[in-house]
Length: 517
Image (tube, rainbow, N blue to C red; front, side, top):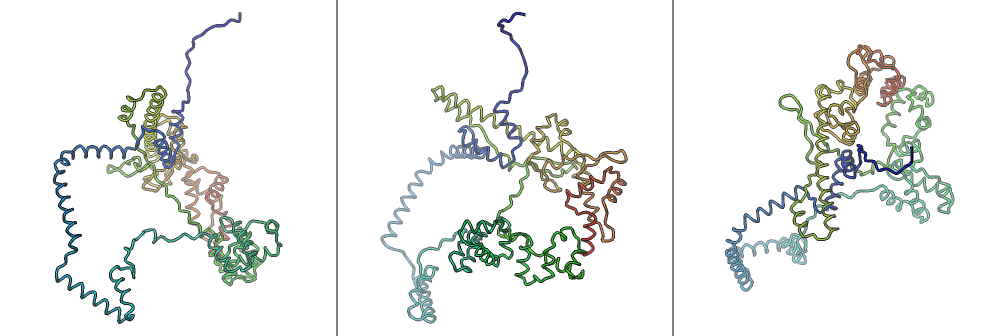
């Protein structure tokens, strides 16, 4: 075959990820806060986009102006005449002064004489002028009108650093100790612990390690108790010392916190040489302490979750599902402005820019509508397939995967995954992320329908919650109970679910129930 140059015409199909398509895909996985910020940015960049609320307000204002034009023209002469009469009356008042009848003047003189007599009786003759000023203005000697500000009623937020520095300046008189103290304050972590090496601190500040340790000992006496501790044991010891409860028996307990974490109360009784009642009292005191003393000054406010979908029971027995209109940004394309500007644009670059902005605005509106439609479609299908959960509880949660929803609504699994990311639904049973309803399946031992992994976890938690001190269920016993209920599950799966729920082992639960904490 000879090597020659040819020109062939071929027809193929391929998926091209245009910038508009990439933008539409990104909009699907955005949360409501991210979407609001993105739309706000687009409105600032695109002059053809505007909020639907602003557009409705402008149209209403234009309609009001057009409807009231005739009334404004008819009342113009009346308004001018009334303004002229008002101006004449004001000039008469300024020239003649305020007019007062005899009865009002007598009443004012009586009130003034009474206030002057009461001021003379309380504070002598010198208090009369101040009392008169206070009586006339209501501000204790000032004739200025008092202005009330709502911000004056707000309490000032006290930060941990300011709280510690204020105490430090009062307790430490030496300037060198103050410098060391402020440096140690800046080294505290968010829990109030000091993780820095004192030798490195002394080398950095150019002083002796003994002086840094002495300053640290002074700082550990500040409020809140337990601050500037270097580990959990020291933090608890500082708080117990502040309460006067750090005796030798309690010190031994703090030296063996690992046994307390393992619930080995028998070994703790032997080491502390304490009875069971004394150990229970000591553990109760430790539980009352604060392992992270600095968190009391954490003023961060948890932002509530705003649902994207709202679900309510319908009157006919079904479910009513709708999008939360508060989280949907409503934007419009100002076609009138585009038509007016396009008629005046002459340069080629300006026409291209205007056309590109118009296409971008139309695509954004279309993408937002498509996003809302897809979210509603996915949420409706989830509610349809998990109807038993909403009607009877978590025990009836069905196993569900993305493929089931994608097949039902004829979409790709990746689209369903993006839609269910960071999207929440408000239901009669609480607020749930859409991802919550997708759980793996556990086979049935009787050959029936599979069970949801989340339902099995909640069943294990319910069994553990009903335990008594004399009947603590082991993992093998839990497996037997679940098998009798038709759930085919292995022991290692029960142990994995128990660890995920932060439930201790049967040995630790038995020790914990033996001391009745």
